[in-house]
Image (cartoon, rainbow, N blue to C red; front, side):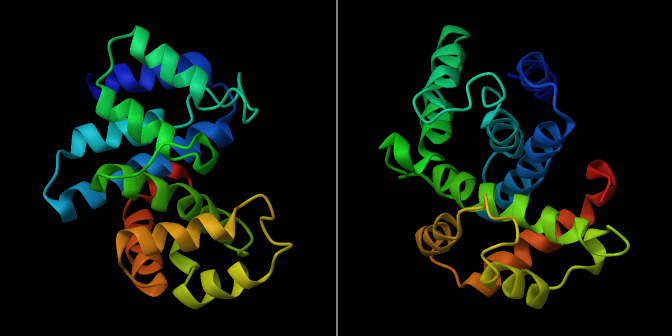
Length: 183
């Protein structure tokens, strides 16, 4: 599947700009981590684009990402991608075994959190966000309350890196492509 095909699926099911931007942020992070791991950037990026494509139409834990997995299977999408997408939802019960699965889980919540940190800056720019800003905001449970801090912690553990390392890599990755996200 090409990026254009993945993007078409995303936008066929997702109309909310914030959800599309989230998918783009995850795609950007997945591509960067693929390069770091010596993996296929197109493949990992497409998984990032598609990980939440069904969320707007099927937002409940009973439906997301299960409906999306079913749709992707019907489209003939690689089972590795489907497993990664299922595994990004902790409640799915699907284990994260491959690097791609672990990275998707690790960047999903954190990339969204970093974007939220940027949006509360006077400039609304990710370039003004620091590791310290992110860590301080993580401690404030009221800030971006929907972001699951336990998922961020578990993602870091599964990657085998420190929180600082993961924040720094994700933050620097988003800074490089901030123009694509409007932040």
